[in-house]
Length: 180
Image 1 (cartoon, one colour):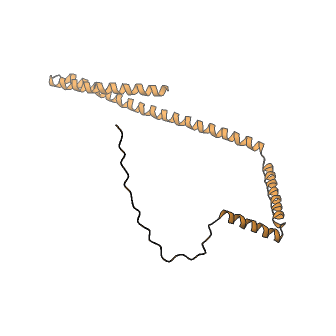
Image 2 (image 1 turned 90 degrees about the vertical axis):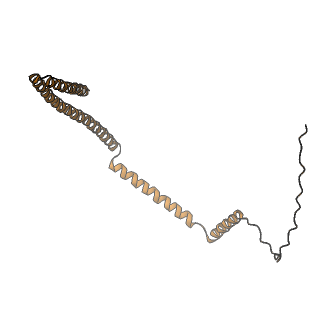
Image 3 (image 1 turned 90 degrees about the horizontal axis):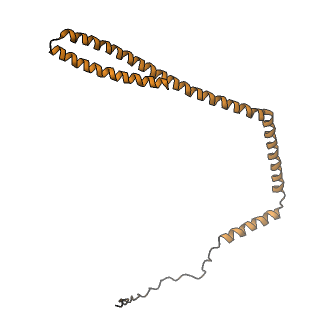
């Protein structure tokens, strides 16, 4: 924070020197017009010295900005390292709770349970006789037919010629008049 304040102060100083340089250049021109060459030369020497100060100030500002960036980056790195440290501690605690042997035991138990269930499924699937299978299929077909209840197809032959429809007369509707 102090570095940023110092940087801002240097920027203000730079602005002040820049304004002084412009003012002194104008004064030197005026002195030359008035015929005061020695005073103008002295003023230009002072201006040159201030320009050198301005260059030094620019370098200091650059150095401060680089330092600020380095510090900010280091702070980010520290946060990343802290995050990695916490993550590592978490993983170590998880490893303490679950060992490789325990994971292998759980996988074995799961495989045993799956195998047991498969055996039960095979026993149930294989216990139906052919009559049971036929009854199941008949019931399935009956349910399917119930869901598909389609209308019956007429057995009478269709007429060959469609009788023409008689024209419908349209009556005019009486107008309703509002009572006054």
